[in-house]
Length: 493
Picture 1 (spheres, rainbow, N blue to C red):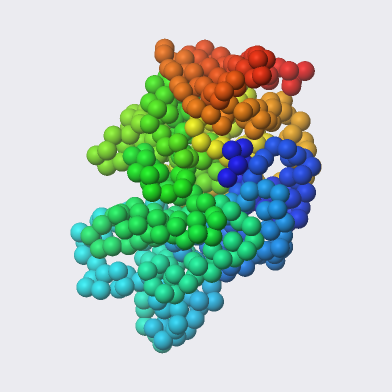
Picture 2 (picture 1 turned 180 degrees about the vertical axis):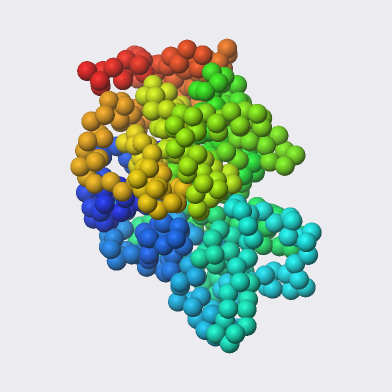
């Protein structure tokens, strides 16, 4: 994985296009900005109940976007990350429809998890209370089979997403088939989507248990043997992320986005600097993704203290709602379908009240923090909340999943804040020091992040009390100072 900034995008939403069109945008409007691209689900179909994360056929590219050769063509030029959806597939899949038609006589019966397969002696109230589910309601959905009998299938996320039994031969064959498709199509980075939910065991939370770690480890080794790197996608307590990082190639730094917001809102960088001192180094950093802004990653879980206190979490969430003029409140929790218990749905730009200086400070810290940065397409373009789309679909996360045209990209690329962000991306991609050693100093809410390699050195200094930030670069005995506020002014002229 190149140590360059990477783009996260839906193929069809960034330029209302297909895979060929996306490659064209990467090579023109976004030329020289990104070393790789995370292609959010491009499988058949891209417009299911969960924006492609409920594939009917995980091994097939949606024909409206192209085919595997088009994926391979992008992979010839860029790193490609793709989602291996390990936990579930669509209830509309051929396999599940066969199960509904033939019941236990179907060759695919063992591909799916039922309540009975995990709890053959019945599910006790005690065991049910232990199960962790990221959304309200039961984790089981009752389906009627063709013979009139009923079966309760495990549905961690929605009733249309039927959980896979990854222990069976059918489950293993399904995942191996997708891995081989990736390998043949030059996908070299695999995001293990919802991997923490894949293993269910009676008497446990059925989330990130010991057996989950073993499963992720086995899957990572299989991908590694094919020359692919794995990235575990898990929203959980920050100590869980530290644990996971020891067992996989890479993890997300999901604690960074809420901690940066907290620091900018409270003018207090202590929680942020503490996290950066202990955070995994083999990570991918994000501020925004196709999901909401994670809260659980910085907060307390059960009796485990968080990086932020409950009061600080409440203030963080309320500040986002206030900065977005209540728009995030309309897209979060019970206000919208497809809800998550641990996220706030809002663009990162609107979470900061569209404050350009705060936004550029947040991006600067992301680029200087340990890890490889990814920038979501709406974050790149400083897009506001997509309220019209949200009002049309009533799906909370659509607030940050707009459909854009090439003309929208061209227009947004002229915004001063976007021009300044692109300059920061170029710095992150070209300064040699980012391949060296990281060090940090924090005093009186002034955070200093430094990278050093031989005669190359880059330092970001942010005073969270005054919102003043500057970058100092020393390379080939040349010194450059960049004041973030002046960078914005330069592009506003």
